Image (cartoon, rainbow, N blue to C red):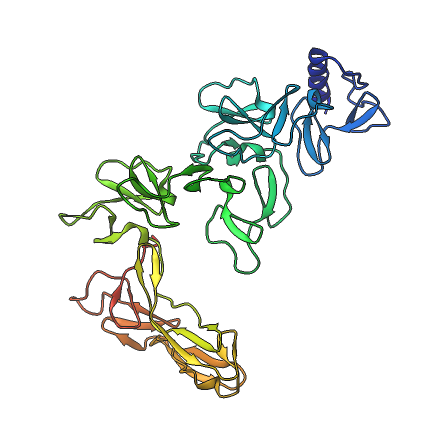
Length: 409
């Protein structure tokens, strides 16, 4: 705290215009513990859930520059060094709390006038490495703090358990019980969004990694919600910041070869486990059908494993009328409402329970479930050691055909 008061004293001495009582004294005013008195008002140096940079104080749980106290800016402006600046740039919104637009670039107010050396960027009025020793900080405006990539407006922010900082504010890490699918997703107003895009509004295109990018190319339509256009090429969202060497192509954020046993994969495919695969399908699991769901008075069941097409699973459906209605994926009534208790999995024993509805119990491990396959833990597992002529696949589908899945090695 002592050095912090000294820095504040030097800053105030240079800026002038305000009377204060700390004057380098680590104890400050006894009536204002942990803060500083300016023009008779006690201002905390930090907020409850965020640390403020040097030259800032806490006002209504927000860090405000001392030179900006009393400065009236318009609603679409923010203050830095005592002057008003636009909150957003012409080409994009500035996503971080306390950011302003300087020369068409978003910048934290605490970083105005701070010149960092190559390889570093400013946050909290200080320079931090752009990348960590063990990882590359690829997100927009991220810096490395204690070997962790953080948004620059989240440096010094303390979120409660179950929350994540985005744009300088804390949000739930998951939406209700469903959770969010992406590792960098947060819940904003009940919807899962990418953390770096929580406060970015795009007039056109999609926000990816904090930037607005075209949803389609001039000569090619990209897969809706899965790709954006970069340099006239449709690129998967997870590959926006990934650069691959010649002979490889990015899928699911990782570079894969484009040659499979002398065969060149198509422009939208990569080689995985010896087979050319749609790169939008890498890592997509279509083996497990989703549970049944109610649509009006019908129960729609997905009876078989799906096929990945353009990054999305397509499942075969069958609908059953539920005269008494349905809930939780089961028709109302003790007799299962005529629902065929069949999940399409040869490794489960399907039956109807009057109290629970359809019940699917795993059969004994080792039960044959197809050519070169046996049941294990309720799943049909491919065993290439059983027959020499079995193909190079890792798991059998419910139709007894070989299905491919990403290796976990």
